[in-house]
Length: 265
Length: 265
Image (cartoon, rainbow over all chains, first blue to last red; front, side):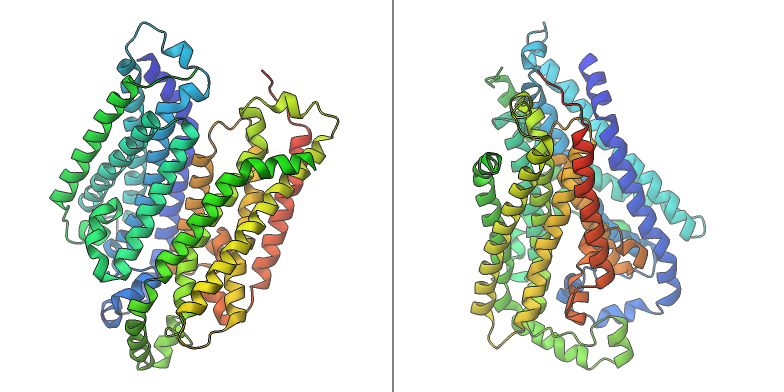
């Protein structure tokens, strides 16, 4: 419990900054929506004429962004990116920081097992990403309802947030695994960052060139689609199960690897 | 001079890795070009059949999709993203690492002024950025020349590729400022990755929204590649803003660091 409290306290500032950035992005995006909705006449007809690859080059999906749900679904990509960076960094740092700060000789000589130190740390991680998720949810519903005659689209947004949370959990587990396996914090964060960039670039390439579509399975950014979540109310069950199982395996491996770890002092 | 040499020696390995990964991203996308260039030419014909008002509204009136540079422009965006992370990383790390690695009491008792230490370190960052740019520029020139079937506009190519230099300088100076502004930095990558991604997402958002005020926030918008290709030059107002901000960050770095309290062991 003490470790959990300490960890929450240590991260409150950065969490606050992350949440503010997220709220700002939602705010900035939705404020401009009004202009979009008024000026664009029949976006559907226009977009139907556009080839898919062009839309990707212009950074738009093939959804009707004159409707508030379609417009909001474009945001899902941004949420995924920010949430991934936040979660993966949190995981990588939280597991490996004691050695970096030379506190390992202090904390791991207490009369508690190693897993009793790691589990509250990971719990703090889960709570942190949950808060981030809830702030995103609250801000989304609030700003959507302002532009949608008071209707916040709560069902659709909560489905989107569920997908986002599964992704966050995956990235937290990935980061924690790197933190436990790799030599130090620097290595762990750099590897994690490289992997997130790699996932992102792969997800763009898959969109661009359909002959490599089978690589889709390698990048978590392609497991959920914003449009499917916001418009069709459809959360891909297989994707969710795969991600949850993989996260679970990563968490388990984190515990195993950390138990065998040679702590540098 | 010793400080500069030492910094360059310490940063050599990560500089090589960064250069290779930037060029790797570039190659990965550019190698997709031959297989989709035929499609792009077809789109060009489709676009030309649209009414001119529509073309102007979407900014595709004078778009040359069949030219390799339009694809290069798309590719370069991801190189800019990665390059920004690299530069910000260097900026944040180079001063703060002395405190973190407990070498501050060694370095800052030497008979050189703090300002001199800081200028040497800034110079080291600049040299590394220049090396990266030279490397990326050469590699890009080779790839684009090899892949293009007919002549392309070399000046535009140079303008595109040089925006990497300006964006890197911006993020490096921002990183320097952040590193002296915050009391203590324990991990570099979460900060630089977070800041760069937030700016990048604001830029993505602005691709759709085209809001002028929002464009002033994100440095990726100062060197908006599609604007550059239209004007064949950088936007003078944005360039001025870039210059002022970089100057301010560097000035504040000197100012704040001269008075900073450095914790020792």
